[in-house]
Amino acid sequence: MSNPSDGSTDPKTTFMIEEIQELLPHRYPFLLVDRIIDYKESERAVGIKNVTMNEEFFQGHFPGRPLMPGVLIVEAMAQVGGIVLAQLPDIPSGKLFVFTGIDKVRIRRSVVPGDQLVITAEFLSLKRKRFAMMSTKAEVDGKLACSGELMFAMVD
Image (tube, rainbow, N blue to C red; front, side):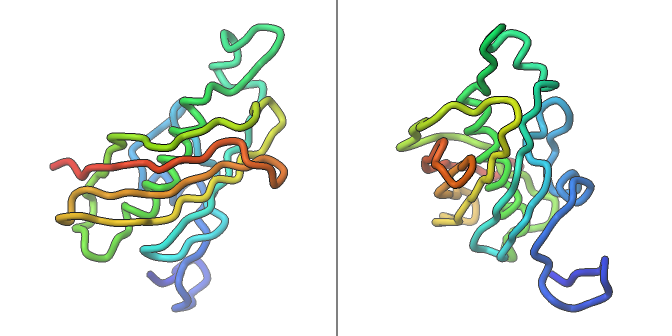
């Protein structure tokens, strides 16, 4: 993939929110990736999610002690994985991979307003050009917040 924003033919390694929205169907309040800061085709993506007190889920999780729900951290990891899967060279453009399973997921620390999640998704496998597996992790300040293996299936 070339980088048309600067006219070069170098592979694109970063994505702004508008480009993420071209690749993922998610929208507010469920788009949980603000930027891709590193991308290598068919291998990995590193994205960020800036966690602010303005997130709707903090109204009820938990009043007086806001914590980002673990399932939303996992969803953010899946969305970064979706950036890799949406651009696999052997997959027709516009095909959608949906999140279908989790293995070995562990939440290691709380994520609170003011944190910046740095999420890494590494491509592990693709079977029958339909079923994919990713290894993912989310870190805050270089410390592991969550990790796990995520499964995806392409839908027609």
